[in-house]
Length: 499
Image (cartoon, rainbow, N blue to C red; front, side, top):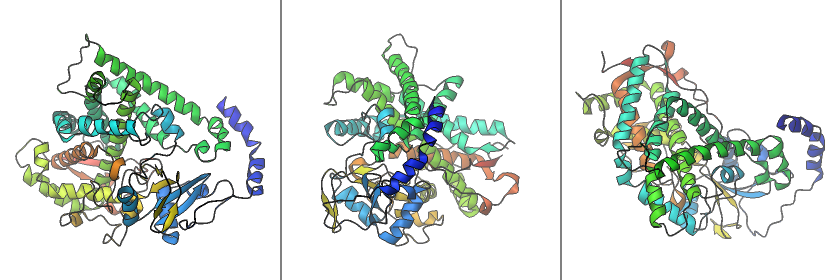
């Protein structure tokens, strides 16, 4: 049916295109001094400039029009932020004014109409749910309690690689499996069975992809019918329904006193059900709230973490000297042990520098989750109207030569003598955002990535297939809300510990 509607709609395409240029683009505004802006098309505004690699195209535009640039994306005025100083104004000085989220059809359908944390609008409900995530789900104590899960799943990953030798290792699949298994155990108390895992993995992949889908109705409301014609609404409804069924089963399993579930530590569902029962949140937290928060953790904790690890290994394979330096550190600190445990990570300064450098060059969310102004405000002398959407280009900010020497080169050594960190205090490095809307899962994400990389480097020597040299490795990016490598990373593992 969708295909027939799509074909039928093509007959109207010439009329639509002609109509676009018959309209006079109205850009009436009460702003006395708006930020600089590039020329716009009627109706579409600047949408045509963002179809491919938006973080690159926005960076190019900002170099001409400035660190604060006003675009018109359909009917939405959109402020693009491309410098650390401007980002600090948005995420610190005027953080509360820019704490709203713009409406998003994909997020609304997939995340129970704003009952999650990442995409919920600013207000009392969001404040209480963010507090639950920060203090109950993702506190340092809670994250540390999952140490045995991370170490067991990392050991399982190493064992699988050993058994696969001499086959080429698909590191993307390896990291996706690891992050999904760790998060399943942390969230639900158990992993999926083999067939369940495959289905759930497919659903999660579609979920993340759809979160980043462009919905025409969000930007040009009277063209919202296009979202029905291209089946976006059908796809959103289908994935939302399937994920809801999975989450319902897990919540019911936790409520069933006869369940055989035997988790060593409280998982996320346990914690959320306790908060709901005790009503300690101060807001009405129903089953939809629980399911929305769980989906948030999967969106933020699986796709982005696996992307981080894949980019890190890609850069190490491209830079043999850095790989060797990391090997020497890991093997010196861990000499004589069967594997790297989390206690060992504290001593690995170069490993932490590699993680920081990777996050600087390849932030998983190149464009941070969009914000929206709650009221009129003046930034750096420019008038910003209420309900203006805000895009913070973390990718561009983190490659700013005014802050970084050779910002496009992989140099982990820069962080060995620098106090700059990614926890929201240094605005030239903001892969997790900053301020009220920063990601609460920084520790969960980074400690898992550090443990996985340390064990891979400790247990194996690595090379590209067929004797390829690192400088030939294609580093092209994919499109989507999370920036992955375009092609999966394939590598050859030679046992170091098991010979």
